[in-house]
Image (cartoon, rainbow, N blue to C red; front, side):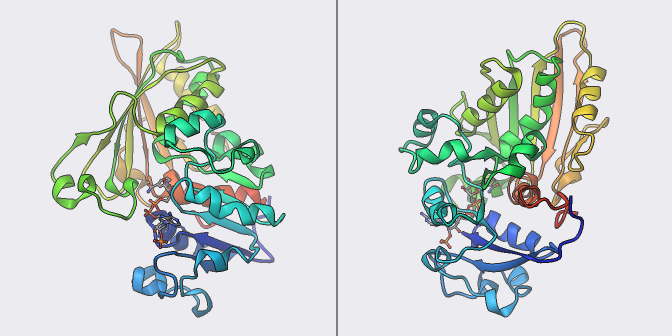
Length: 349
Ligand SMILES: NC(=O)c1ccc[n+]([C@@H]2O[C@H](COP(=O)([O-])OP(=O)(O)OC[C@H]3O[C@@H](n4cnc5c(N)ncnc54)[C@H](OP(=O)(O)O)[C@@H]3O)[C@@H](O)[C@H]2O)c1
């Protein structure tokens, strides 16, 4: 593994005007081995980034400080491209880079997260634009699929809710500590999870001093991604219940997860399985005290703790991430580091 970088990697960001886009620019600016080659936008091409995000924009070098249109970006072949675009648009936008035979792509959208094209088509309500690519993509939950991430040119960066749920559950399923049946995850997210554009549901008037569930009864688009990855860990089909909630915060996710301990298994067994699985993974921290979202704000960490519930066979898990960092742009940068054989923590600590 390289701890220093002799030649800087050139990196482009599609959709740099969005929330994950600006988070990536902020992180990349402090990465010692990266040079931003361009930042793109469709609606604000030709605009100085400092006009969109004054704080971050002022730190860009003048040669890349203006947003360029996607068509211009697609004529280049940087070492890496991050796509911070919505699903469907993203799969189309990254095609030229995948076809140039060089550029490695980290797609923050959902386009390549699901292995089954039929599940994608139903979940996202349109036909996948490039189903032939799906088999090339690696699901970029870094700590779980690190070896495959290191070998691929196309990483599907995980969803924010799935990251907070999968990181604690996968080691417990693999080690036979909890049952794959009866898993329940109640997740609460800050409003940045919905992206930059305000909608009625994300308007300050609705969100402030309010707390609501949405997409209940397993109708959220992240459910198939969660179920597919849990099934991979358990080696059987898994049918979790997932209920997302919106809380009046800017950023952060807290997932409360309920699992059935298998006979003879305890809270200590869960902790031991986590410590073993995540030894050598600097961003995933099993902790004894219950974590809260502030513990991980603006970090690439996922922290979780467990409690066995007395009188039942239930294990309660509380897991927290910053949805903009470990749930999106931070994990994307972590994946880029792994794809290029760099120290996984570069730009992230
Ligand atoms: N927010 C999160 O917590 C989070 C977490 C994990 C993954 N993600 C995923 O990451 C991606 C970006 O999310 P975000 O929160 O950054 O969204 P966002 O704030 O809405 O930004 C998306 C950007 O994409 C561009 N865009 C929108 N529609 C487009 C289209 N049809 N064609 C080309 N460009 C288009 C827009 O830029 P211009 O108008 O300037 O062209 C916009 O600024 C999404 O796929 C999202 O699901 C988000």
